[in-house]
Length: 447
Image 1 (cartoon, helix red, strand yellow):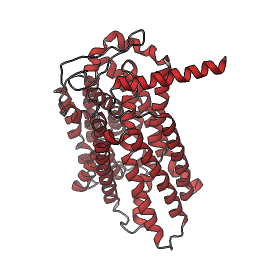
Image 2 (image 1 turned 90 degrees about the vertical axis):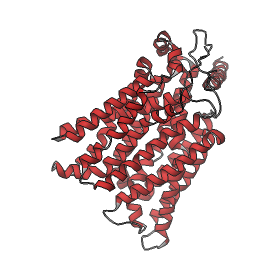
Image 3 (image 1 turned 60 degrees about the vertical axis):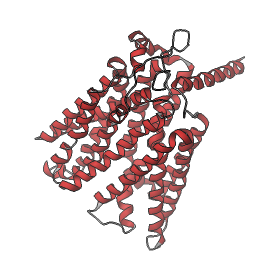
Image 4 (image 1 turned 45 degrees about the horizontal axis):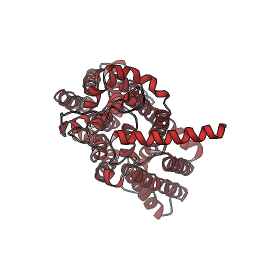
């Protein structure tokens, strides 16, 4: 156990664990600075959502391009997420985060100086690469430098940084006006600079130093271990759950729901964005205070269960005629409840679960795979939901999402162990025991 209260180490060829012992105490500020990987993601989301319409007008493009300008970051984030883990194994978690900061700054610089659409899209893709890679590496770094009793709260800071970044992006857009799109996007230099400059002053993860180059190279072959395969399946499943349970679908409809409820009209969506981002921030902060005491699994089950009820109430609300006065209040209450339950459970908890369930020798690439699954699902839901809801109807779309979320609750209940207040080594013992039990049962069944 190191002085920060963490035991972790690479597995030896016989399946044992080499305990990392170090006198290096990682400063708590390192966790906050690493969470800057989430800040750049949130800031870009909040900024581009309010700047994209002005960009389309500036370059005199068809409105269909508005979605592509926004989605270009997602296209960059997917390969970035997959590459982030191997990069963190090769040059270190700190080195990978420094690279993310530098690439994000370059992407923002291209966006701000773009004289044409191609230059702008190139900048968006570079920013996306950095965002995707940091969404893998930042939780990885935080999980390895945090003591067991604070790891949940520290990892929740990543999601808190994402939603706080959204708030900052929206506030900048409100301050300068959506037509000043270069200023809005250019303000991303601030969180990017904080990530690059801050991590330059921070130490490397002791676990990465202790693992050794030979262990990191040999780790690729360790994906065949039953315990690793089991953890990988669960991690990918959890990453998918964060997206396929419809957070992007609800956020897509949020301005229309606010308008239908009489709280805003056309042209006031920026206030809707701010209100929802503030709700996400407050509840995510609450989750960060609870996650180490209540537990990840418990919060996930509560959050997913609340989301199921919220979806079915949303479907009911959209099934009612607009002339029925209480319908708008039913819809509004269900919307706010859904976002609150997401921010309490899947929002922060899934990031920390996929950062702590893998052994050190495969943690980087395994996290990259799980994070890629999250970005792929994000892109799929975001790009297909408008057509999907048009085909099946608004009410049926939310009923279907409610069913998907119910199945996600069952998957979480059946497969996810509680990892709260356990060392990373103790978490691995859970998977070893489960794999041994499943393998033994499989052998008995075959015989």
